[in-house]
Length: 275
Length: 117
Picture 1 (spheres, each protein chain N blue to C red):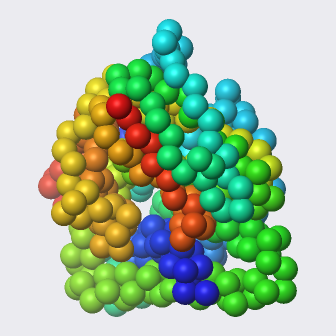
Picture 2: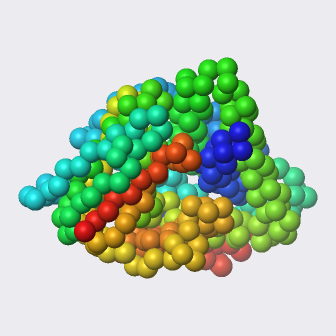
Picture 3: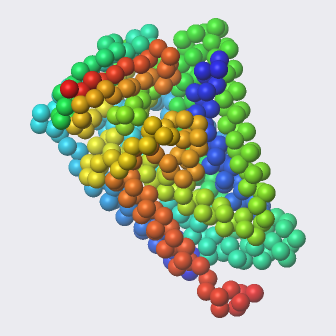
């Protein structure tokens, strides 16, 4: 039972962190609960569907369907996170001004909720797929005797939800005028880490072979399968044995996002004009 | 501005994807084919040997009715293999050494090593 708890928790920790960050980044946006809840629901449904077709997915693309699928949805998540950050760079100051005017009440303006709902959906889909297969395996193999293990798995899921809550309420401790700056930086590093993960899947599928040299091996110091390693893996993209291409993708994502945010940010004149 | 930045973001992301996918899958001329089987949540054989410096095509057959996630940090692979099916892994040429792999769903029993000499 404890083993099942640990396995499931390990799988859902990334999605848990991402949901917490997204909730914080959309703190003042109306209807965000529906959008983000919808993302979780869609991701869960998608995970169940993909689990049913797991065999077909694995066999697709000369046996590398799973890798290419993972890389593709990670790519989508990176794009959506970039869109959100660029949008916030251009509209963030308006939102903060509106928050002040409305006494920090909910802001009704349009936003990037769709992008973030997709990010949440993708995170749940990717890891949920493995959890669904794991739990299915237990039920199929053990029948009634698997109940304890199954409950362990559910407890692991609950712990993942607790990670979301901890992340969210932790971030809310940040004064609201800094909150979006903090979430933007977190989202930038999250996106860079996901881009590096996408590269790992493309390398596994042999779709990328250049710059495959290992940059460093810090698995003895901090394995990225350990709990802290997993958390840092999501938050800053920590990898204990990154390849050159992963490093390049990581830095390129950060650089491109920073550049686009600079371009999108209103100049001082524009800000004072809008006010 | 936001329209432009959205387009720029989409364009940037697309070109990154293109760049990433540009690599060509390589069919190794002297590729070594290896097979291991998962049965009762154990690898058979639990230790396989491979020559150093040659690309390896590793086929993992899962003969259990339940799915298994084949994972090796050392070999940089992870993939779910459905019950009663198989998964293929293309490994780059490796340095001599012992490379550990596990079945993540049953890590207590599903453990093995690839010994490269």
